[in-house]
Image (cartoon, rainbow, N blue to C red; front, side):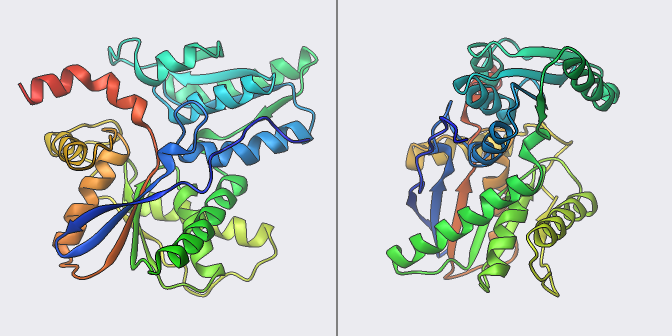
Length: 319
């Protein structure tokens, strides 16, 4: 059974300009559509199709109150007549009713708040409760993690390959924000399956290099095995954790300055949690590794609504 989820693909690749003598391009995955779009929309397309094929009548997932994944899951499921249950860890931050939380409210999901250390148990209790009440719930891991999420970005890599042919160039590097890991796993899978040499650099938004790399490699192994593909001898996972600051949602001045500079240069808005941090990390990586005369692609993975939740922080920073 097909869904009502229609994405605007391929997303465009815009030329940004020179950066340290390199040619920088931006792939606008923030323009996939569906409730302000983003990389989660590509993944939800496959999860929703699978849910409908299993005759699910509701979706259960989890994420923070400012989760891009929760926003797009709520939108996509509601469009297709499915109820949504969001398990969300309680937050001590006075974040205000803004950004993704505000947008999410339009879809009227059932929000289940729980202590962070009780998320797993709350998910299990929610699923069991729904089944006992006669519902047929479909569970999606946070961030669209899993083989379907990986597959979405394997296809995105092949989309980039076609656009390279149209642009008559090949990218030496692809940079992006790396969170739960399936976006990077999909890109790396696409690279290996198509025998390309592009360096794919994930800029961590929270995890340290050991944990982040492990999760991505596990996702890759799962994807190759579930699709009966030979596992490459060298799965080159380049995961950089030098720019996470104090962890997830730590917004420091360099990120704010980067977001402002990108907006003033291109009128493209990044967010402080994902793409702003990744763009700043990319700039630092380019300088630190003295990259020159390279063709570089930055994937804008969405998350723009989060920017509005930090209006007062930006006001204080640039007053």
